[in-house]
Length: 185
Image 1 (cartoon, rainbow, N blue to C red):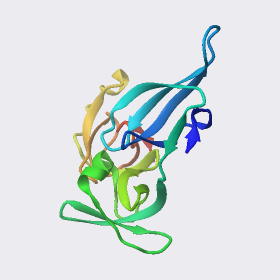
Image 2: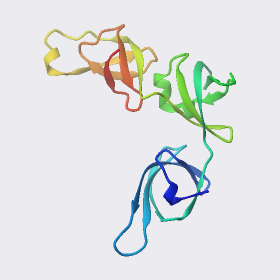
Image 3: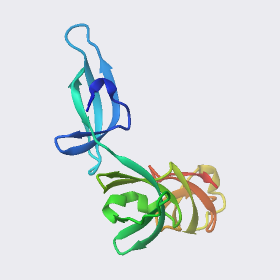
């Protein structure tokens, strides 16, 4: 148990039997009345974001979330098989837990997986990854000055928008949070 004065960004709370990550918090001391803490919480499983206000000093239950660095090995059916880099355990993570991270996941890539009481909660990739472009149409001569984009398919099968000068086979950096092109690798 902790109080609302101990809140930090990234902390995981257990409220009404559900797990919530603290996205943002702000201590407010109005001129009149008691102090309170305004928070923005994100549901760990559904991703829903809500605003919640607590009175200052109220006790909140902190969930024990174990974050472990793991290496992605392969996909088997609907499950993704990872290997713990510490004890070489190989848990199977369901596709619905991996979610959109599957679009940027290559074999032997490292990821952080959060567990609560042995149950996987979510997969966290690095902020950007380097992937090869497996297919994109060639850019037309003279189109480069407009700063336009074209669709490209990455080696993982994901589709993103890239600048016109990118060609098939090039390695590019991609933001894993938004799926945007960041630059050449």
